Length: 309
Figure 1 (cartoon, helix red, strand yellow):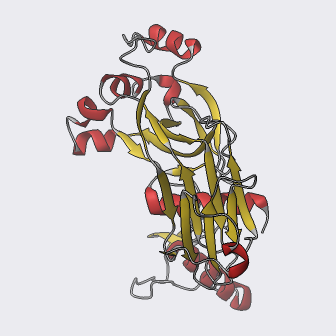
Figure 2 (cartoon, one colour; figure 1 turned 180 degrees about the horizontal axis):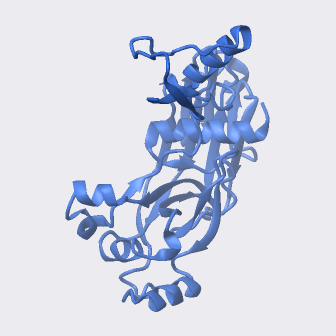
């Protein structure tokens, strides 16, 4: 499976399970306040800037938005430390750790993570494990409300929170219905998996530095329709909504399944009949087409728009 497809598939599976975005390359830092667009092929965020940079503050000042993002009350806040966080996609069953004899001989008594995962045959499954993650986030209220009005963020995605940790394990199943046992032990090779999976990434900082960002929250601006439907939402959180992926539904190998619409089916049917008979088929026979009418083909569906003579 190409790395580009694996990246997008893993990100898509974790998003479906958590409404958050996975980072396929956790050593590449993603910061709270980053904004940009999602690469449709890889699913990765292409960062264009950060709301806490001086250049963005200058743009806010020019637009007349009165907020000083360098003030301590506006700066990103940190949550408490979690022990370990395990996320898995639909169809993945987590069970108690029961390693094979050759793995059991290892010194795993002090392992802080011990879990077993059963994956569904014929289907990709994703697992993300974070060791001692800490959330960092934009404070709700004034910050999100005012930056929502920033012209620079039109059509952009905003990172409103991140999860940083000193160690992570990423796994994407190979559709074989495999069962893996995973442990995090205090050894020279901290992450141990049995058997060794085909598509995985792992790292551990022995000094405990929070240098990896495996997970983050991504939001986009609410529309005018949203403001009309939910008046008062702007005062609460700036109407920042969870992002939908910019790609069509994916197959098990991370390729887009282009959904066929009724117009697409109509166009194809009419075109095939025209090729064999040089006549035009009526996709909706219940709609009467009379002799003597003139028509102009509708390009999206090839359904004629009729005008009386």
